[in-house]
Image 1: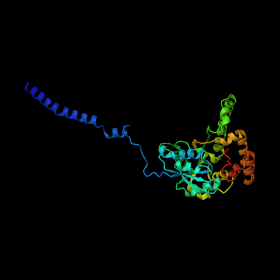
Image 2 (image 1 turned 180 degrees about the vertical axis):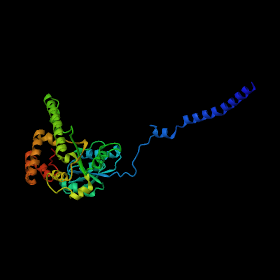
Image 3 (image 1 turned 60 degrees about the horizontal axis):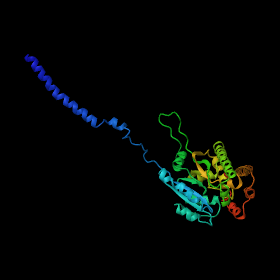
Image 4 (image 1 turned 135 degrees about the horizontal axis):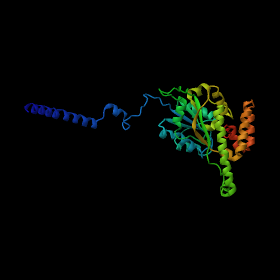
Length: 341
């Protein structure tokens, strides 16, 4: 009986010493999870950021001539990248001597404004020389960039890295590229009589036909860009500034300067195509008609490819569009004449 009493006493002492220590350890573990648990906790996981990543500064060059109604939208779409992607960029508007409020509207929108001799080629070259960015993006004044465009351009030019576990190789970096093409919905009604007539059933059907033409035209232009690597200026052209300098910039031409420049770029590589579209005003298609404008532009480009002189092609283009004397003068300076499709 005495031996059993001593054994029970030893067991009681052991329990009073061990169980409190276990309880304290379990409470501490509940209050503060182990290091492995903290590292994998979704509420505590930090976003990995590569150290010392160089984010290139992008310079957007917008040539203008009497574009007071459009330049603000173009500049604001370019400057929006600072809030959507955090990328530093500058917007340079190069005016060719506008007679309207283009310069004032561009400055009010936050762009740096330069003045250069008339002609889209010379204006783009002047803007590129003043640009401080590693990447140049040439945008028409009646076009707008998509949301988040800066990050999309950076990724397109930097290439796509494959993960460490992926068997797919890294895609090679590109030196130039473009966006998909899209036409805006503006420009259907150009005067008050058309606005009044738009309420009729005939005008409604005509608008539906125009919307269908726009969708077909967009599909054809994007197919041409993807299959033949042949984008034009209205889609937005971006490239490394170093490459632009090596090529000598745009050739001083009164017409088709974007076609000639893209031809030289194609000899280097195929373009990187951003899936998001640049949206362009359909005003020139509404004036002449979608089918007639597309046939005219395609014929002009084909004639240029077989060696017809640019001056002769310009005369054909101006005559076919039936431009007035003032518009024809602007077109001769390379601003009103456009061959987008």
